[in-house]
Structure formats: structure tokens, C-alpha cells
Length: 213
Image 1 (cartoon, one colour):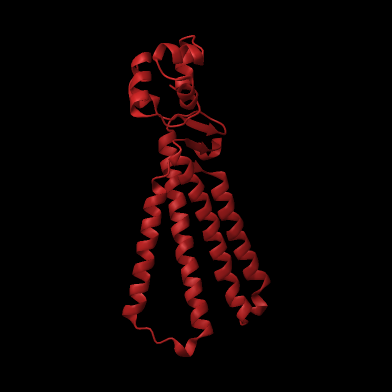
Image 2 (cartoon, rainbow, N blue to C red):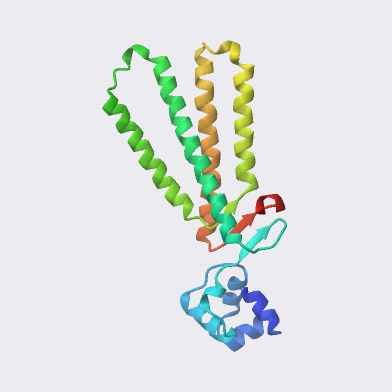
């Protein structure tokens, strides 16, 4: 239960809670605004209401329909899906640029198998680090992430059909590396926003009834 609901259940105003708990009014306002409290303030409020400290952590702010049951489980599934989408996009983007390089300089491409495997290993390590970082985010945007992915996939298919007659031109070879780079950057931006909100101590999930089942 949130601090606000506990306060309302006790029939107290913010000012009364601050006075009786010994905390400042600003601290109470921050607590109800989903900002992280210091361990000492959390302990004081937990003792005042007679609840466990863990129950006073930032609540889930659910934007959408349905109940909050199994929210953590749904968020874990959505985070896993987002990471898979991002890593796949990352590798597709890199492969497109490698293909573009091979197209523009076919005669100069004398890289050994070991060199290529080394480059791919570095890419894999970078992707793993990014995936681990993004997995720490407690914030999950569902619609914005999936819609962004869908729009770029549809655009890639449409561009592939519309530009088929120009498949041998240099501009065609540059088109898809640029598209997937833009897609990776957009997904990366969403991840950064999620991480930034997580650092503020908020937990947000945007869902719909269909996504919850």
C-alpha cells in the first residue's frame, strides 16, 4: 500500500502526518510523489504505520486497463521482449553496415576470419553490456516501444518493395543501414528514458487488457 493510501486510511492530512511522524512536510510530499526516501525516513514511516519497509517502496503506476496483479511478471516479460528486439535490431544494423562496406570496397576487403570473428565478439560484448544495463530498468513502456518497432519494420518492408528496381545503386545500399541505425537509436532513446525514470525511483508500466493476458 502506498504512503498516501496509508495516510488517508489513518484519516490524516499531510501536515498531520509530518507533525506526528517527526518528518518534514516536504519529505511527506516527496514520499507521496513516488520519489525515493532515505532509509531513515522509510524506517520512520514504516514504524508509524506499523508496516514492513518493503511495502513502502515506490508503487507501480499503471497506465491502462486491468488490475495490478502479477505486474512484476508482466514487466519482466515485456523487458525480455524489448531486450530481444533491441539486440536483434543492433545486430541487423551492424550487418547492414558490414554489407555496405563490402559493397563499396569489395577489392580492399582482405580481413581474415579471425579478424571478423573478433569484431563480432566485440559487438556481442557491447550488446550484452547494453542488455544488462537495460534489464535494470524498473520502468517499462509497452505501446511506445512496440509501435516504434512495428513502424520501422513496416517501413523496411515497404522500402524493400518500392525500391526493388534500384537494388544495384549505391543509394539503395545505404538506405537500409541508415534505416536500421535510426531504428536502433529510437529504441535506445526509449531505453534511456526508462532507465532515467527508474533512477528517480518510479515504476511505470503502460499496458492494455490484451497485453496483460
